[in-house]
Structure formats: C-alpha cells, structure tokens
Image (cartoon, rainbow, N blue to C red; front, side, top):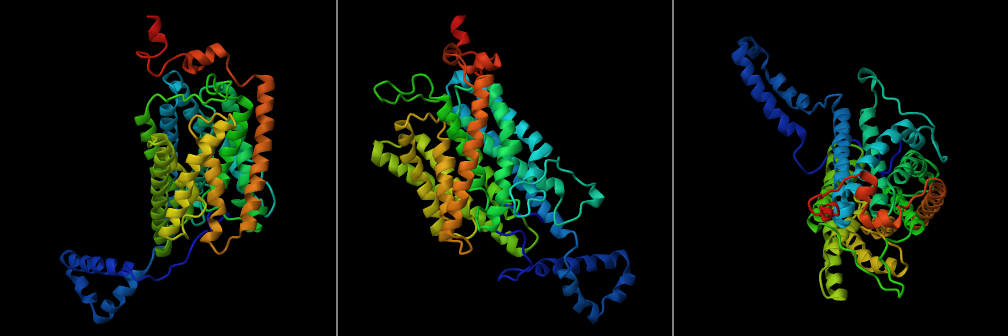
Length: 469
C-alpha cells in the first residue's frame, strides 16, 4: 500500500472495552440454526454440545474479503464527500461575488473539477505515487486500473485513485475564490490543468508518495500543507500578479468593501464544505478494516467538528470585540479555518487540543484579512487566510499532540512546499500573462464576467442585461 498523507496506513485487530463482533453474530447464527430446523429437521442431529461450543469461534471468523471491502468503502464514501466540497466551494464563491460574476464562478468550479479529474488520471496520480522511493517525483504515465478479478491488495485501485483525485481538485478550488471577478476563464483553466497535473502531484510525492519529506519526518495527516497551503500559495502569487479589483482600494489607502451577492448562498456553501470535511479527514485514515480503524475515524470526525465549531465561536467573539458587530463572513471563514487547522493532525489531539487548534484558526482569519488589505492583496473569499495561513498553523501545531513529529521537520515541509509551489505558480502565471493575458479589460470587468466570458447572467431578471430593457 503506497504511503499517503495519513500518519498510518492500516492497523491490525485490537481488543477494546466494547461489544465484539461475535456478541452480535452469535445470536444471529443461533437464530439461523433454529430456523434451519424447520427447513430440514435432520440438521438437529448436528446440534451437539461440541457444535455449540464451536459456534462462538465460528462467529468471530472474519471473511477474507472484509478488509478489502471496508477499506474500499472508506475511500469511496470519503471520496464522494470530498467531491461534494466542489459544490460547497461553488456556492461559497457564488455568494461572495457580485451578481454579475456568479455564472462565471459556477463555470470555473465545474470546469476545474473536470480538468482535475482528467489531469490526475493522465499524469498526476503516478507522478505522485509511482516509484518515488524517497525521491522527488514518480512516473509520467496514466494510472492503470486492473480488471476487477485481478484487483489485489487491501482496497480497490480505482477507489484509491478517486479518493486522491478529489483532494487534487480541492487545491484548485482554493485558487478560484481568491482570483474571482477579475481573471479570464481560459487562462485560469490552463493554470488549473498545470496545477493538477504537475505542481500539486510533485510536492505531494515528497510526503504522500514516500518521498524525501516523508523520510525527513514531515507529518501532514490529510493535507493542511500539501493540499490547502498548496492552493493558498498558488492563489497568493496569482492575486499579487493579477492585482486588485477595480475600486477595491482607494488612492488614499482606504479599503472599499465590495459586498457579495448572497450571504445565504455563502452560508450554504460553508455548511457543505463542513460536511465534506468529514470525508476529507476521516477518509485519510485510509483503513476501516478493524475496530481500531473504525474508532480512529470516529475520533477524527469528532475532532474535525469541534475544531470547526471553535473557529466559528472565536471568530465571532473577536469580530464583536474589534469591530463592534459580528461579521458573518468572519464566522463562515472561521469554520473553514478551524477545519484547515485540524487537517494536519485530526487523530491524536484531545478535544481540548482540537478546540485550541481550531480556535486559533478562527483568530487567524480575523487578524489576517485586514493585513492583506493593508498590503492591497485582494482576496475575494478570504481563501489565503483560511487555506494558506491556517494551513501553516495547523502543520506547525502537529508536534503538540503527535510525538512522532518535530517542529524542525514541520518547518522544513512548510518552507519546501511554499517555495516550490510559489515559484512554479509564478512561472506559469507569468507565461500566461505574457501570451494570452490573464485579466479582462476594464469595461468587461465593470460589466461583469458573466457577459464577457460566459455570454449569460446568473440572475437575468436582476442583472446588468435587464437594465437595458
């Protein structure tokens, strides 16, 4: 089983102070034996004391395929939950941009998810996992899926590919929200193709593919750095190069708030992301074939939820203290920052530590958003504080609860990924800017990208087009 972002791959059966499977199966088998008597009374001859003593032992027997089935189910269920996060990002972004750009954001999100799926099969998966062996990259080959009858191992190969692919798409979704309302569609999608096919898999191979960061002791259970900070670095570089939206910052240094089109839609998107995160973190246990694995996944769910809740509460309190009112966008991003923060290690923290880790993530949002405005870095949805800065914090927090990690290894991983992704992203963005251009004209931006890039409006009865009628 190839090494991934989890702190462990699989576990063996261990006893717990809880009901064992035989306590559930033995009564069922006994009932089946009684029912069998009505079908064939001759079977009563086999119900001897020796057979009765053997029944509990038989009840504890685990089918040879059970580990394969449960591990595969974890990948598939976790995968479609993470896939549902694509909807969450789309709704969050649609709510946070102005109505004249909503159709554009929806188009970008369905496009990036589709491109991620193709690129991660064509080259991304094997570049990340195939033959890294302590090095830097795998192979430049498509992912081969064996026939069902020959699909050996502890899980189905296709389920593993699907689970890893949706993580790749998540990294691309982060870039979409930051650069909203002032980037052309096709340059963005070309960048997504390169990010998902090459940039994301290469840095992922260093840890998840058993590369050099894995050997250095870097720990990142589900991707605070490898997924979220990667998307955050790519978004930050793009935002700096692209510039702010027209009218966002005044010449006197003032910051002009640009309200989104629908806070209910943004709230819905946040709840969808929160739900999907249980697949993101829980699925990264990578095994469900034992009682210990099932208990670990449950603990991960609990810590994930607690961290998100703490992020919301802290962001709301700090918003009230510093601004006199509770800002909904801070609360929404507080939840997401709490989720990103706990992603690097959702298994080992106690509930108290999960609250602390998630709460600090919520505080990061409140303090980082105005800092970006001072630097005139326009981040439409707040993805840089949520995914980049909170991702760094979550990765640094791992040694507080995981004794197998060290601050030196964590810092090494953060810096290595940050430098590589930033430089690679800068090169791609500069090439796109010099060739096909990345920003629409001032007139197109003023009219909204729904018209210039998509030829439609999300709300035609209330949009720019309706004003001409």
